[in-house]
Image (cartoon, rainbow, N blue to C red; front, side):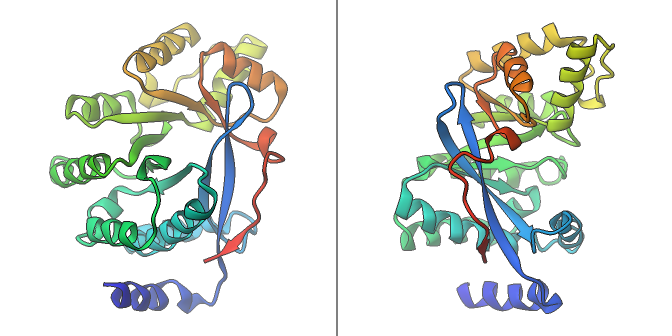
Length: 264
């Protein structure tokens, strides 16, 4: 399997002769202490090139090859530092037949505490009636191995209240929900300038900020932590705290224990 992954990755990703990197971004607790680091994929770290590249490999259904490189880097660093890490996880990664074999093999080679790894299920692909059995099986397998599973970018694309309710109904033990930065931006600006919020389609059952606060409270009642993206100023941090959010991420904390780019 190792040879297959490396050869496939070389053919598909490196044929364009680009440089690929991993970058860590801090996740900070309410008392402004480092809680974890999210590892993010980058291409040359220039002009958001990684976004267009991710769209390309998603269309070719090759994200799993990139996922293996990110995991190897994150697990190796975790073994050395013992710092918690969040790793992005695509639905199509879960659908890859080698997914669980790769994770189990990596755990044998790199000795870490799986409880320190939180896989963030991304928002770009739907969980359908055709793929849900496989997705549920593999998410539960991760949790049985003591990994954590969370939802990325709630209220963006397919990340909705309905997805969370579906996973909870199917007894997937979610540890965290990350609120999408665009949604947080909308709420903050509405609050600051007294605008009427134009809620995104994924959140139409929330009528106002008070409804959102109640939803956060309901998540915490079932032991799901809530993280807010897009914390860029002290005002935004104060606003996010008023929503009873547990953790924070974005440019305000880039100075915090900053990690450099690492080539993968």
